[in-house]
Amino acid sequence: MKGKPLAERIRAAVAEQVTQIGRIGLVTVLVGDDPASDVYIRLKHKAAIAAGFDATDLRLPEETTEVELLAKLADLNVSDDVDAILVQLPLPDHFDEARIIRAVTPSKDVDGFHPLNAGELYLGRPALVSATPRGIMALLAEHRISVDGARAVVIGRSAIVGKPVSMLLQQANATVTLCHSHTRDLARHTLEADVLVVAAGVPMLVTREMVRAGSVVVDVGMNHTEAGLVGDVDPGAAEIAAFMTPVPGGVGPMTIACLLENAVQCARYRRGELAYPG
Ligand code: NAP
View 1 (tube, protein in one colour):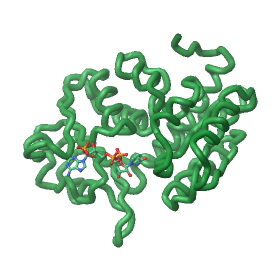
View 2: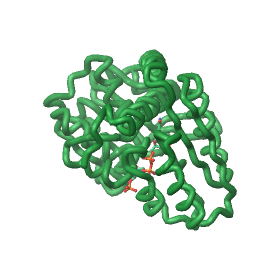
View 3: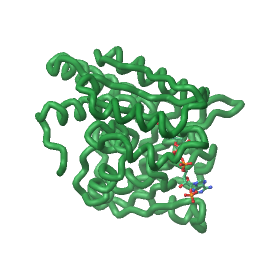
């Protein structure tokens, strides 16, 4: 279940929408110089610029205070040049991350992390939904995988991946089990799964023996190891599953494509073409 072909189609469609809308301002904010965050920001920018966005890569030094970052976000929130704002996480330790997430105007919250967006998703009225879960659902739809009535097992309960994807699966009428680090006998759950989504950040957490024959496996994990970039699932499980995403080249490209789609959605909110809840 490769992500790249669909991601490329989405990115081409986004580029057309950018042309129609005229100009879309996307600002990313990176505080400090975490190397992994730097790579993610570069990838997002490359994709945004290729799609025709007016993308600003705002870099702030590690010593930036919370008050300074809040002031910067307040400026971006009211700027007519800015449609979408992304604060790259994790922030350095001296920031209260939840406070920063709350400080982004919800209709410009391209990552969908603001409690209002997370809450609307929880209530079954998705507004801006984080890109990775949306990418996963789009991949399943692309491969005509019927989620309705299926048993879906999600490993990982983060606010970025596990929780929102479990909401989307449930809203697509799957029966969802959410597993985490305290789950007893993980294999008992995974072997029941028609659709298994793994987002734990633990290489080889799911072995081929833990995958049900003919099931669908989505490996969200991105782990930098001595052997290179690996997921959370043994690649050999692809021989057992009917469909499985590769790492790299599966969920990763979908995340970036769906992020750009979210930025278009933000632009439509700001222009009144779409109504933001409330
Ligand atoms: P996270 O915030 O660290 O959350 C990890 C989750 O996995 C937690 O809920 C944790 O349980 C659970 N977990 C950890 N070890 C486990 C174990 N042994 N058994 C069962 N559950 C376990 O991570 P995240 O931000 O969701 O990211 C997860 C992975 O996805 C990472 O590798 C990340 O790099 C990758 N990722 C990829 C993309 C992409 O575009 N491909 C996007 C985002 C993230 P507790 O809650 O009990 O601690």
